[in-house]
Image 1: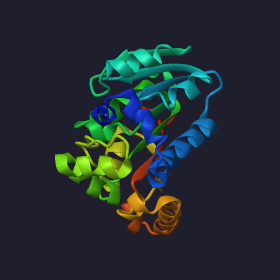
Image 2 (image 1 turned 180 degrees about the vertical axis):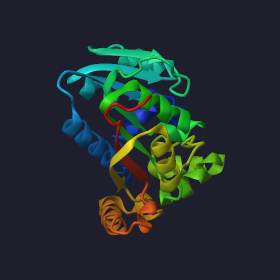
Image 3 (image 1 turned 90 degrees about the horizontal axis):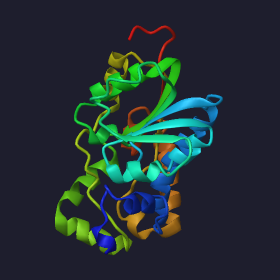
Length: 254
């Protein structure tokens, strides 16, 4: 039964943050820790949050404890689960088609979503319009040429995915990424939407074989490698996730 879980399942999403494989656990939680640190530092006092892509709700509950959350996801299962929380109004919807909520939100979060969206420019435009002046967007998405993304493409082949499940002993699925962006391509879309870049940071390095069979030592090697590669603007493209803090300028023309 576990092998039938896919990216669209809450159980699969939650498992990523509880993996028994030390490197897989770290890869996902390194990103989560960065996002939570930015949510904490940017939290508006009793403000309004927009969450684009609810997933298993790994951030929804935190935001609901600090303000009111409007969640948007194309997956009805994720929406139904989020609506069980207080201070959450989750809706089924596509951010590339959104036309409401102009200048309504203090802080928006879009983590691991735009790689699943063909028209990420439209998504960024709509998130920009949804924010108040001086509002912030926390955005994460994979680096196109990261080692993880390069090897993950092999999961589209069923034999490879089956082997990966056997190695990890837990659900593994094709990532379903249809819009892998380079840092330069994403920056261009960010600027076209009207955002100012406040911060950019890259996290998490996947090393094949080391990740699968290295155990806790392998995870430490990956962390060390990430710290080394991050020092180089060129080599940091190999790190899995590019993380951005963006700002809608005051009195921006929307």
